[in-house]
Length: 152
Length: 174
Image 1 (cartoon, helix red, strand yellow):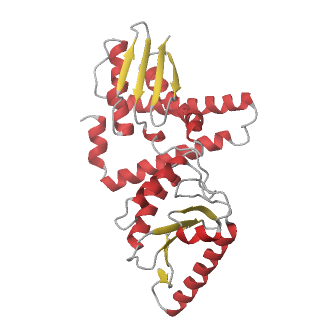
Image 2 (spheres, rainbow over the protein chains, first blue to last red; image 1 turned 90 degrees about the horizontal axis):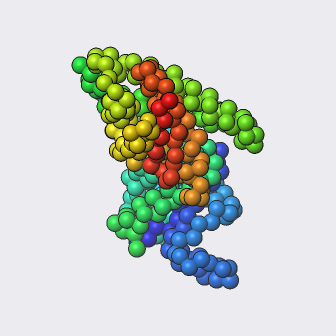
Image 3 (cartoon, rainbow over the protein chains, first blue to last red; image 1 turned 90 degrees about the vertical axis):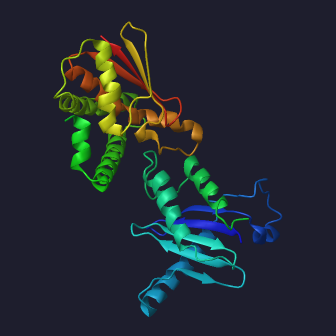
């Protein structure tokens, strides 16, 4: 199973971080664009996709909260599975993987606790709620996701 | 009962964690408050640095008095610096200074290889981090200078950051 991408949204509904890995499905549509050689491509300027993702997540969350006590945590389609984690303090993590992924709620929670809190919240050089560019966060997140047992 | 032990016994691990985190965040915000609006003017930046250093001076004086409450007088300057490296740094950062160098003529260089307040710092461009971290070193410099002055030593302390999280403090005795 692969992890395709991750979005992080702050409380103001802006996408403050986005990374892709192994993006096989996007290669076909973006062949004409120049791509860096590495598999991982960081596109902070794909605001349309980010807005769409946030919209989907927001609507599903409202619907789920009206239908039951538990919140919305993930949904699956024929081509991908989307996992959602909302921290009590505000930032929302959205993870997109292939459809066969197991429940990633723990993974998302530990990404939040061990990567986001450590290297963004505790970083003295970063203003909260602004887009995340710093080096340590990027490398740690990348290493963490690549070390997941089912990442390929 | 010495200072560090008193602290250790009075708090549970969770209380200590909350206190440490609150202190770290408070200092982070103090530095950015001091810098607000001053980025472009050279003198104001220096004034902000000096302000933070004076804050640290006052705090360092108080901390040193508490830490040396039950100790006898210090024999010489080297003893005082060794106290800073061990008994003063320990309750503050849960570790001691990793390296002490001196030229025996009043200049001491203290190296902390993973300085607590720098350990999570990272800038957008990795190479810029040491420069940005320098403003955050004003408070610890003041801490050291305050501790030294409450022990009767007049000095000047300068910090150098080659690479985060390592930090070097240079003490010159006057």
